[in-house]
Length: 280
Ligand code: 13P
Picture 1: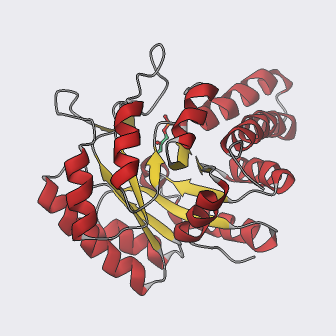
Picture 2: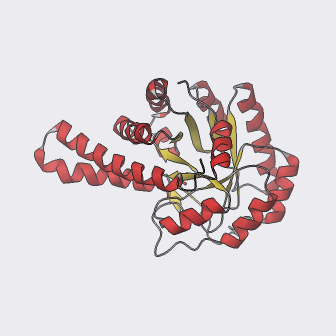
């Protein structure tokens, strides 16, 4: 199957009242493990390439690897740019065949966020790709990108309304107290705000910072309209944990396979959790 768009898989998620996982991919072993789990679960998949991987020169390599696996898969796969930082980066991703791009204008003044999202839409539509924008801030640090924690970070319903009136993107990431990285203690998610935002949003909502959010909170977020959930840190930690336990073998394949096994187990569990709300 060739790569599909974010818009398409989120429409599917809406019919099932479920969420689609977006796993960050950083190397080929991680891609292999994610596909193995998704193949067994027969569930759509979003493969996200983030800023650390891009900084390390992996964008085109990861895109090629994702495409190769997707072509053999029997379920829909989206190749997505995570936290796109500029129009230039969006162009690069589209040139590499990404079928979805996120533009992270959340640090910009509201009007500029609209403007850069609009420009991104033009580029993406010309390439047949989807667009995710962000309102409110995701706390914490990921791939050296962090937010000033003193800045108001919770998404405001009036901003969602004004944003939706100005432009129509395909997905909207919202800051509801979620954070990148592992939470210190229990996440403090503002579910009331999520419900309000979902009531007025015309586009599906995205939850970033999925690592470490307990299952009951994930299910509640899905029941309140979250249709895409991003997981990066836990994937990397699982891979590192796996290779660390096998490192004493000093042998490449046992080490690589131990990393893959941990990622597979993690991803399988996340897919089962995220599709839980599914109605047949
Ligand atoms: P975590 O690293 O906390 O899972 O967040 C992932 C994410 O939101 C990627 O955009």
